Image (cartoon, rainbow, N blue to C red):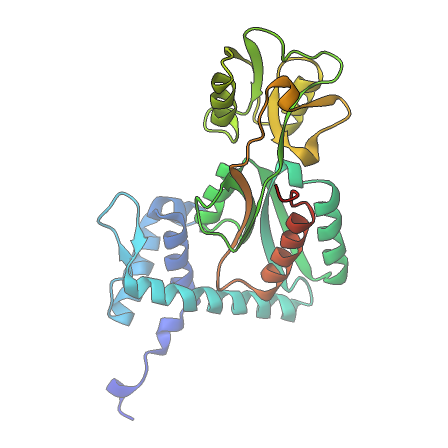
Length: 295
């Protein structure tokens, strides 16, 4: 085989592959450089070098957000696999953690049965390191899209984005058990911030009832919402799993109709490590156990 016919094995330079994957995940050279603890010019040089090696443009830089080209999409799948195998080999040789799984969960899942199940998994697989991030669904989804999370469970409107698995979400109208305020006019609402889950649906539902409303309390914290309702600051809409003894569930008798437009959805990438898929199966099982009864 002549030199010109030999395969270009330098295409497998993991440092170059890592740069392209990070830019594709972040959609930005600037953000990728920060995450790689490098400079934007260095990351750009690595991407250009790899493009020269493979003979294809890998990233489309024509728009504000960088996107992979068709050739880039093909390379990314292999690159992620090679990087994952490299990490697993390094960790295995070090005798320590074999794989790290970054999981994103909404606040109402960062407790109880979910954490007990994840802890049991970790005891069974002690060399799997779990990094769990709790937060609002929109923030978790953004982190997943930027490549910062490997597995996420989020709340979304039904069928708004295709997921690996999803389950209808059972949510309840709740008021304070001790200091009820649903009869107030205007009715005070306890909500997540603008664009937060349930907020617009709460307002639309109250208006459809012919009731006036005001925002009585806003918080990005689930615990804050729960406490505000329990102490009589307003009515809210929350998953049934987080209703406490300090809450009273409101229904048709008070004029509140059920809202059935949300689902819990699980996302992970097709090239994910088998441990990611095993953890996803655990989350899927939890969702199925909590599934609402058929109407």
